[in-house]
Length: 81
Image (tube, rainbow, N blue to C red; front, side):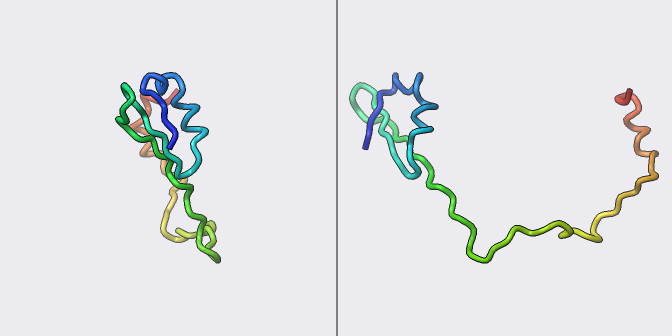
């Protein structure tokens, strides 16, 4: 497992995270002794075969929009130009 000193993490942490492969680990040392481990999360699993993202219209008929209702806007008059 690769190592890095605690002092070096202050300046290179972002770069270290970018270069760390999925599931990879780096030991962080203070005074030559390990104090922490930085571990990259594994890449997310792909969706199962045959799975499709739900399309539009999933909530059809469950929402009512009243376009001619301006009464609720009276509560926000002080914020409107």
